[in-house]
Image 1: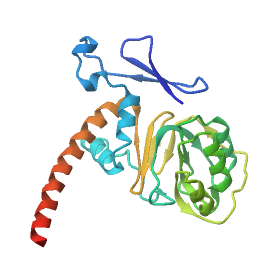
Image 2 (image 1 turned 180 degrees about the vertical axis):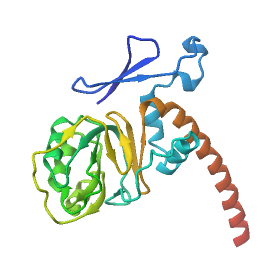
Image 3 (image 1 turned 90 degrees about the vertical axis):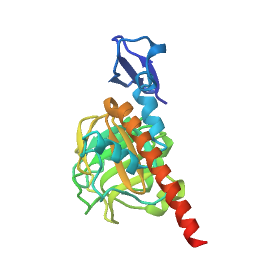
Image 4 (image 1 turned 120 degrees about the horizontal axis):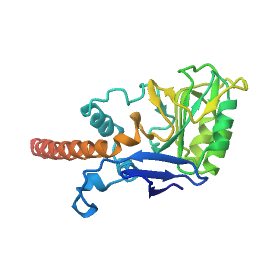
Length: 245
């Protein structure tokens, strides 16, 4: 589990993982006291990120678009192996080589509870990077899911345990086992640059990535979008119901 505590510097918040891994986030500070600050100023990136987990990736993607960030939504090739799957958590990033399942093993040794394994493979889908056994190992470690810009297999076994798995493709062909790969470095996955600790959201629509420093503002925009669209849809549904009578 991850915990949140204040850092040594003003406006600094620390997200501390179970084995001591620390992510440092900067939170805007208006200079006013805590009791005088608006909710957005008091909220930590972690709290904002967790609230956003209740929204669809469409709402979060729209929020980032409104903020001027059009490069935070992964390419449509990245989809869950089952439409009902959702995931959320800070990213454990993995740079992998095509078919090099060694990188998957590195990730499984390092992943902390609640983290999402995000693997950049460049969209190479001939050889798989993940399957049923890796999914079981990840679930045992408390991993919140995996996003892989490559192929996966053994889908029946993955569905059986409900492990949230998102991928660019599905193939029966085994990985190469090449001893290549790195973890906890900036990567590209699904066309999005992902840094260690970035917040990752996935549902049947796809995957969106929110850097911690954008979490609070993204939440505010997401709330506004959801509220506005909910009012509009309620009105349209009422009109539709009236038309059908």
